Length: 552
Image (cartoon, rainbow, N blue to C red; front, side, top):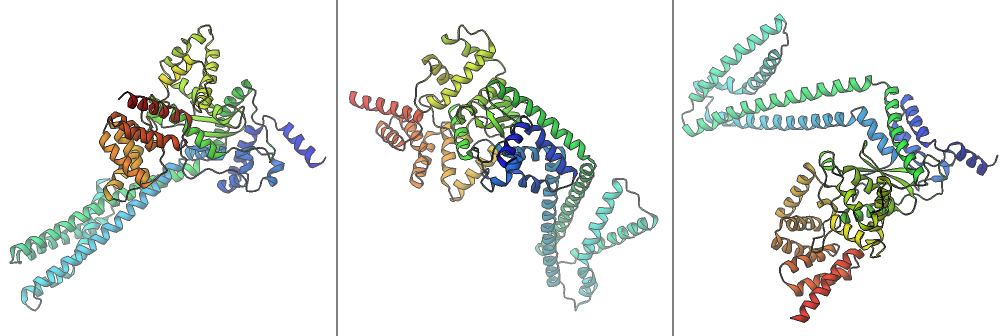
């Protein structure tokens, strides 16, 4: 059998077997205790792209990779998804979090110890300058002054032991005797220190020196609290390590297989319905996904259907990730895993495949069913009685709306066009809102981090164009139009990369009744060859402004 026949035979035998084959590979790697990252990297062509096993040698280094920072939704290959799932089972993220916390606490401890040593040195210099050790009273306190650092050390040790006793730790007889002796000795030293401070005649000097002792005591308390947190974190990490080590490999493998089976069932059912295929191993030279194009398609649809993530689920769980899977078919949404699943070979084109998944996402999170009901009331849908047929019709129309209609081609009924325009796309007079600023795309800490970064950039004078752009969007959304105008003016002067800055400035000028400036910015926006829908919207403003000028 020659190589071509062998591959053909293998492809035929392996039909619908990719989703069984890959989990078995991962399970085998786990059982043999291999380095999973290295193993996945070695067989990435098979795991992520479904390349036939006998053709792995022909792939080379030509496989697509993901950018470090996606411009839109988080994109995952199958290997990324599996590693993330394994990390969830083994609580890797929790362990990494504990290690980072422990490292941070140890860093803080070093700073406190360094700070403590500095104050102790300053205290020694201060006391040495006050007392003349040639005099009798100076000689009396010289030994105490020289031993103050040791007093602090024993005091901290005593605090730790008291903490241990309060938590129920049992001390032996000798330990308890030592602790009692330390307490007695520390009490003696405290009385000597009080006497030492009373011997300082100058009031201001006495206050400064007393404050140094108080500051050192505060630092010791902070050091104790840090020691408490470090010990607690380390104990939790050690316990977690024991938990992780006790998880049987077969348990992990079984959970992976169970997870993959659910994804397989969803994909097989959907791709079969639309005439696609999944689970079939591919030839090495077949077309692979274009990640850059995928990112731009995702961004375009999300920015056009700007309310898609404005739902309770998004607020609670964040944005869905995009899982790229080998196979041919339309995109779909898996609510159980909160994933947009895209076969790497679309049935028609990538935009329609993504649109199919987004309609599934929208319908699932439309808790009141208002979306499908209002769509069903359109004249063209009045005779459709099957919810399934109505959903298929919505998928087709939505796909055309976010692809061909967006590009300026009128391919759907005018009632549908008006329906989409009313419920999903931006309205005439709306500002352009980039992905990061749409409702539902950033939550809590993410939004706070972004706004903090922007404010720091504007305040420090080290302004980046991106920060000015985001700041102007925030100002527009808040109705702070004069502030937004100043920010966009500065942005346009700094960079020519933000073509939509001219669109937003045009809207601002319309609101401010500055028609000549509005016309100028809309014209400059159109000359930058933006997406056709936005260009058409800007052109409507240009026509209206020119007609208004003629009337005047």
